Image (cartoon, rainbow, N blue to C red; front, side, top):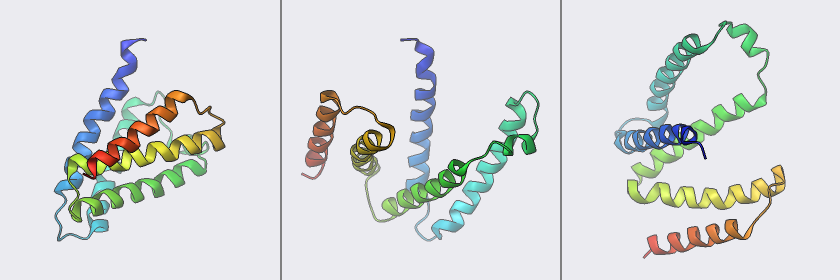
Length: 142
């Protein structure tokens, strides 16, 4: 396996650390959606800047001709994720446990989605992984 394949994984891990630290540090007395407005203003400005820095022939109108439903659903899903994580941390979840519970449950759901929506095989390794996730959730509950 090419080591450069781990660059995106590194970006994801580092970004996730700051993501969860930011979510956990969101003040309890701010309306979650007011906080997310600032989050998305920064994200929009950053995305726009990165688009112009990385596009060979920047033309947003040409890009938008290729949009599908996925961008709209992704936007709604991201709001749900961020609202859920901020709410989870405001309710007192530990940063070390909340993500593990969410990710373990997500792995189980994505296994099912992968099978039914994308025709991905369910292998013994995946089943063993789910069993390990469930055992990990059991250990966390003790």
